[in-house]
Length: 123
Image 1 (cartoon, rainbow, N blue to C red):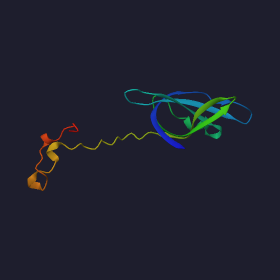
Image 2: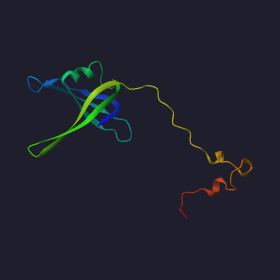
Image 3: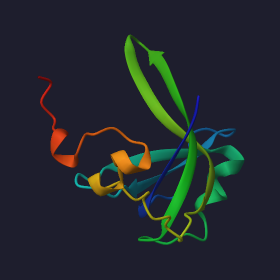
Image 4: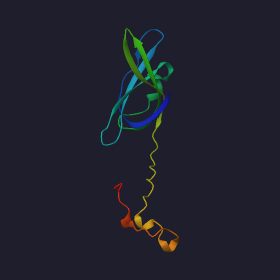
């Protein structure tokens, strides 16, 4: 499963050699929003250097896979990053919401309903 997320680099850890043939490196991003989240990702093998060149506070986009495994009846989940890039800086404005005055009137071929006829009550 492939996912992507944007956030600011919060912490970058050193590369660790788990064995002679396996190395891993963790990093954490902080998401934006009302309740920011600190999300830890893992880079493995030749991908450990993907986070090089990024600094704390820099906005990045992380592409990752969700990985899970079992060991001695314990379960582990990893977010395995496979691509890191700078986040797009240009924000697209949200689409404009229509006002009630934008509804067609009876003269424009619409119904005889007015803006006051719309409410959120189901009855």
